[in-house]
Length: 575
Image (cartoon, rainbow, N blue to C red; front, side, top):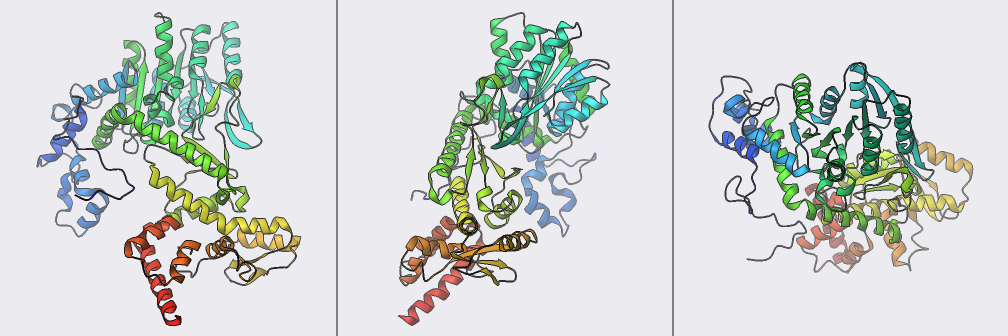
């Protein structure tokens, strides 16, 4: 057998049967859902779409199956009680799966939710508070926390937020001030009953939970704490990330003081960092039997009575993958994040991008915060385009999605689904975008244009090489860009004729045609000029992929092939 040349890692060997994993570990809930999905069960209850029964003779069937797949349709079932398990009072495979998850994460009890972590936060706060109780909340918490507190009849005080620094747009809780407010309330004889923390933020800020929780416990041992770690579920499974997690902090506190009896709830949005389906969420609990019963009652009160069994099963599978492969996958993520920062800092072709952190901003230990090393926040202001336009360009032209923008910065989350090939796609896209936009910014800064600067539409040059740039010109460019025009730059071809690097920048700066989304690099141009004698279909695909992530689509590869054929025909004729 010929060895694979793909950059995508080979999949791990599959178990011979469901639940047959190398060291005897099991996924009881996933196995149970798979077992009923494989049976041809006809239901007289609900969910007519289950097993695809309601669309078997429908003209919509092909679209349904293309979107969801036959396996998903079979697994989406509506069984409860002894037929599969009770969601609210589990006694079978769901109960066992939750027990295994609690053991893996270090909790006294774990609840699976298929309605997202917004619901998990509401359930936790309902269980941890009572009407009239005093709550000290991190102002940077997710909206679900604010909405829940507003409806629970509690008295809420908010700890203020603070900015990272002038160069970094992130905000987070002023934890020293939060602890000061907590101590002052205890001294006054009116201690807070509950504290809410958002410990792993969207923007990649992590709290020093061992220090914070230890201080809370020492001041008021009876306090209850909700820690929203929505973005950090996977952190438990790598030794570099584990020490700052809430459940590990509680384990450490318990080991030092067996009398530790604080009720702590931790919410994890599993789908954000683990291999779980969207809206899969864990609610972990540290506490006595009464706390567990209150949480079970709150779950019944707030969770949908129609849970998604595929989502719940994915939580079971994600837990086992994290146990067995989490350290390796997170190690890769940490390495790739480091590679991205190094490339941005050292590659001249990426000089328009400035990484923010993790080693230069959140370094004051007294602030009790640090960077999440799996996140790379990048300032793109030197490109001369907005972060919103940059995100849209990555999505539309390179099939790369970035969710977060903050001022002139965008946030790349290097999660366990990002591999080496994906990072290379991103870096190639960033280089191509810089070739297009950085030259315009450099020309504007110089005061004299060495480029053609062209707005499309209409395609008429704003400046030609040698023209002076005045405030009116700059205002015109800003106005055109704001109106939706794309701004292209092209070096004077004559002046750059002897400079291969400049030729590459020029040909990369302006698309060849409106239909061809792959800019011609110097390397590809050299192959075309040479007559393309050795350019096979495989070489074409590899070259196109190296130029742009957009080239991975069949349409773009076809367009590149057509353009190549046309240029090759011209080269042959002229030769």
